Length: 217
Image (cartoon, rainbow, N blue to C red; front, side):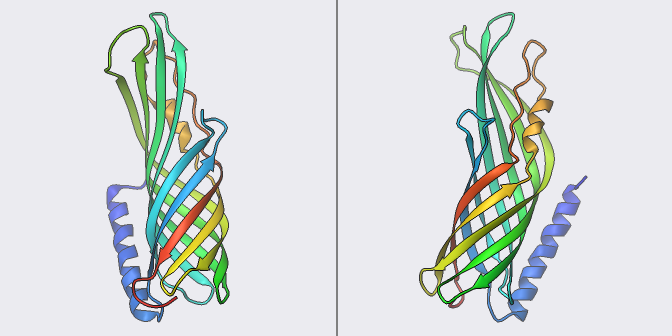
């Protein structure tokens, strides 16, 4: 189990690692933001999203490691027929994650292609909001459960240099994120059937923008 103290030690190590490599390597860190989408047939809209921001630490040979923060959100709705009345259960999974990516690149004059494994860890919150459909009220009953998360993802992609400092990219990704199972632990009242779990272990795609504030690409 990863404790809060372990998180602090790891983040401190990563910050020292950034400073060390910024000093030792000729190519400075680059900032990036990514928008990811994942396909899941277990969701009502068959889709969930993630927003990511971080820094590419350095570029050395074919290696371009990254660290990032990501926010993921998935949602589902279903109607349950309880003994008292039908209820609408709005179930949600949200995640706050730190990611470490070992990106391997083949670079060309105008861009690059790459492959990567990524490990992400952090917190998963599962929540269910219950609305009694036969009562005229705006207040929802909320039930929540929280647990630690940690999983790998793997991807391939490309990057195109737009200018001296900006580049755009895209990628395909497979994520081994099984955090949708946390919905089974949400402490709903006994009259309510627990919401179905979400299959977040799936394929996805994303778009990225890189910015180099220090030097030319």
